[in-house]
Length: 238
Length: 385
Image 1 (cartoon, each protein chain N blue to C red):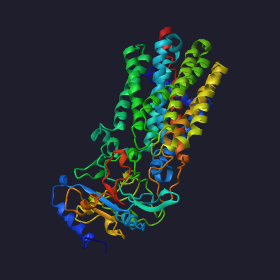
Image 2: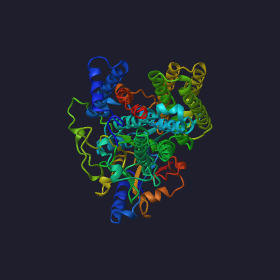
Image 3: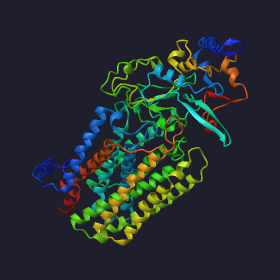
Image 4: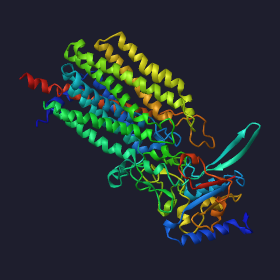
């Protein structure tokens, strides 16, 4: 078990989460930190996310990029998991013509599946490629048993079953929502709990005592494509 | 206000056209467009019944494909018709008069054909009412919807005015300015997307207006050439304005295409390599084939048949150019992971191609039926009496 100051990080984050949930929603600010030195590229977060949100074959809320950094001969490999950045100044929400995607008062950028018209403008506008269109693909194809694939994913704490292309979220834009359906029940995000290397941290950065706040206050932290001015809420620790 | 025979065909005229179709006397163009409409409807039905997953080749890497390109293409054609109607009335009144109602009518039906294509691209078209229930004034797409509605209303008004011999300069000027706002908003829809360097540019709204003018000129030249032949009008006198406008359109398109490419090439932003990747296509196709060759063709001949060919050539090449523009932005993925290619290629499915056929056929069928019914000449007949 990964530890921080002698305590299990999952236990610390769980305590932080309970403390955050006691505050009014607008006083919370959910964020994620990913320690790239600890990420071993096992893709457990990707598969954990897929099983949690029952995402179809062409949709990954949290892919892991394997990238080469530096120039030969001074090169090295690193793994870069990419959830939705939950930007503080998102480029995806202003373009939505029907306000189906918006920023909540706790900073989370969410999609109202019952409102989305499937124009894909937000997918085009996201500079991180974090949004996907659910076109209605199934792992099992059309002529097989799709019982598992039409189960309720419980995203956003609501019931959504992909029974046909007229049932949301098919036809909608989809993205990572920091497992808000779990978080609001007092559970950590699925990617945080499945991370083998203990590289993913989640919590409320408005809480100075939270583990994530302590981690991102260090110098060796960057945010992906920060120059775009989107103010991402995902911090990478190097 | 007289509706039948002036604004829309009379029942007797429609029945006559139906009889002609049934008896094999309708002419090849009407049969071809009816066939196109039939297979187009089949494709649209398939898209709605089977869903996007089984019919459309767009993906998360290429979220907008041929249907959006077709939408933009027809929207620009419609704008172009409104521009030509404006400049025609303003500078070439006598030469332009026989074509006025035809051109503004085509402006209306191309706008409808644009929506036709757009409808098949939307993931949940049944929720379009959210534009009214839950509007987002920050979104260019929302404003596009508002302007488009105004645009359709005013060009329909312009059509009614022309057909009822009550042409109003105010409505004509209004239609022109609303067309400018509507289609520059459409340009801003792409131009304001900062994450896609290929789109992101203040030039984009102007680019859309200039290209709209060119494509509109080509379509109206075709209409004028056909009408001149059918009505045995003086070719030199009546086609001269269209040649002039086409040359202006080609010049404007050259300026904007050249600078858009040059400014794009000078960018050093993440993703701006797309301008280098598409440079050969941008120069050889986007400038030489789309602009220079039509200009040379215009210099070669000025007969109605030749102008018909030149118009069709520009329209055909512009459809590919619109697809290059829309899809070009997705050539380099913003976040490359797993087995994503370094350069993304997109080939439209047969269903997507048939949506183009459906939209084009819709325009052709409506135009031919109205033309055969004598609606466009109703005003001239009344004047003669």
